Length: 108
Image (cartoon, rainbow, N blue to C red; front, side):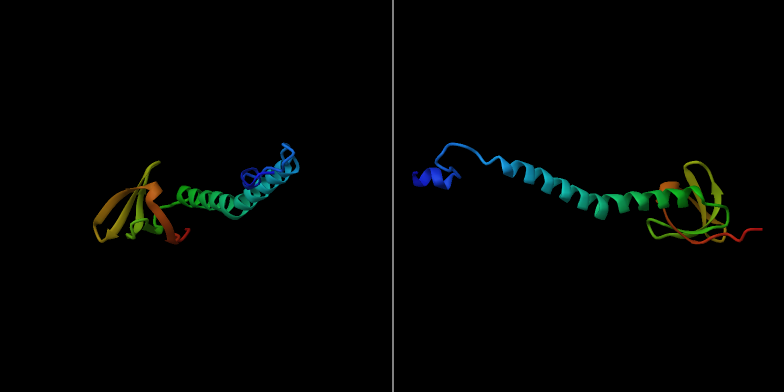
């Protein structure tokens, strides 16, 4: 066998390695499973929780927007939330920019 054929992975017999293909497929499946359970699935669960939180907003809830603005919910529509950030100062933000609810309104 020449040095070039050996360097290129040749065995001298002209045949390829058949058992390596199955182990490569199994290894890739294991890597995908690890990525799924450590990265993809937790992210999907967090997105579901955030969506549920945004759908559950009520008048009087204290919230923080993604930009860091703290305010009290005074109005709600399907896509907009009106926040009172100071006395008689109200702003409208998209629902998707509500980051967290810091205090739920007292139920009466």
